[in-house]
Image 1 (tube, rainbow over the protein chains, first blue to last red):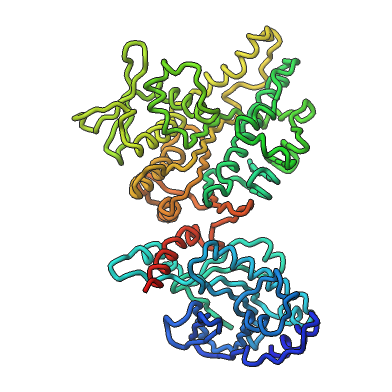
Image 2: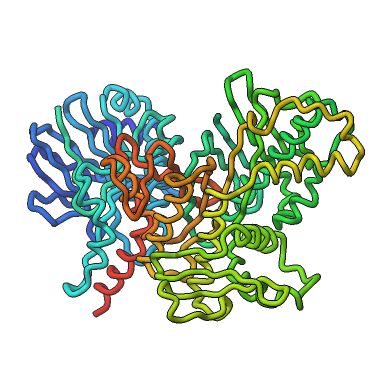
Length: 203
Length: 384
C-alpha cells in the first residue's frame, strides 16, 4: 500500500516527491476501533468505545489502514487539493478480500455531515480509480465498500434522548447498506454505521 | 401498473427520478428542500393523467369533439410554479402496464405532449382516479367553515380551496366522526342554513366550536375525515358522472355517446397527498395519526388508495419501522401495518432524492432524522 500511494499516486498526479511517513497503520487484531482525533490523526484502538469506527475481524485478516486525508494534506499541492474532497481512511486487506474507504464523523457543530461524508467518499473513489495501479488493486478485491461512520453522541446521564433516537442502530448491528447509485456505478457499495454498529470483516 | 416520474430543473428540484411510485410514499427533508414541490408535481401529473383518461374514454365512446383543453400555464400558476418556468423544466410522467402498454406525459420547452388523439389510452387501461391534496393550509378550514358565508368570493389559494372542498364533501357523508386517539368526536350539524362543526369529547360531556379547538385538532380533523371519506364513502359513480356526463349534456353530445366501458369495469383509484400530517401534534399523537391514516388507506379501506406525504417528524419515520415489523409479524399496531414492498421513504436534499430504505433489510434508515439530537448533545458536551 505504501508503494501505491507514495510512488504510484504521487507519480500519476505529478505531485512533489513525498517525504511523508507514518501514514499507514497495519493491524490484524480480532477487534479494533479507529479514531479521528481532534488533532487530525488517525489512531487505532484495541479497546472498545475508544473510536468512531468499529471493526470485528474474527479471522485476523491483516489490514493496511492508510490515513488518506493526512497523506493528501502532506503530499499534495494547493492546486491538487483545491475542490478535491477526500475521506479519512482507506483500508485494504492483504488478502484479495477488502478495499474499504471510510469517513469518520468527528467534527461537531456541522450540519449536513452525512451529505458531506458521501461527497468525500465518492470523490476519493474517483481520485483513487484514476491511478491505474490502485485501480488494479481495487479491482482485485472481492468487497469494495465506502463507509460512513457516524458517531453517536453522549448526553447527560439523566437524558435518554440520544440513546432513544439511536436505538435502531442497537437493533441492527451490521450497519445499513444504502442506495448510492453514483457510487455503485464505480463498483462500490455504500454502508452507514452508527453508534455500536460494527463492520464485520470475514474471509 | 407502475407509475414513474422524472423532474429536471423545477425550482428546488434539480434532478429527481422515481422509477416506481409506491402506494405509500414519504418525503423527508429540510424546509425549502422541495418536498412540497415534488408532491405537487406528482399530484399535478396524476391529475393530468386523469383528464387524459377522461378524454380517452370520451373519444373511445365516439364523442369526437375534444372535451377540454389542458392549460399548463394555469396549472403551474395554481401550483405556484410559474417562476420556475424560466429554467426550462422537464417533467416526464409515465404509467406503465406492460412494456407495450405505456403512457407518457412529457412537459418540456413549455409544452405538454402525450395527450393527443394518437396517445389515447386503450380501453383495457382506462382509469378513473380521484385526487386529494391536503395542504398545510388546512388549519384555516375551521375558521373558513365558520365564516364561509361572510367570506364569499374570497380566495385563499388553489390548495386551500381543494382541501376545503374535500373536507366539505367528506362532512356530507360523515356527520359524526370519532378520533379515538384524541378522545374526541367531530359533529356536523345544520344550524339555520349553514353547516356547523363542533368538537365533543367522546362522552359528549362538553362541546366547543371546531374553530375554538386546539391547533392540533384543527390539523388532524381534516386529514382524518378526508381519509375516512375516500377510504370508504367516496362515490365514484357520482364523481364520474359529474366529470363525464356533465360535459356531454353541456355540449349536447349525449346522443353520440356510446360508452366504450362501464364505470364498474374501469380501474378506480384514489390518490391522497398530505403536507406534514404531524402539524401541531404531540409525538404520541403523530404516531397514532399515522397508524390511523394507514389503517384507513390500506387496512380498512373499501376503495383502493395510494398515500403520499411529506414530514419533518423523526417519530413518524421511526413509527413506520414499527408498522413494517407489525406487517411481518402479522399483527396490527393501532389497527395498522405496512407492507415493506409497498413503501418508499425519500430524503429530498440539494435538488435530488435519496432512498432511505435499507438494502437487504426491511427497515427505513432514520439516522438522518437523529443527527439533530446528536448535534445538540455534542454541543452540550463541548460547553465548559
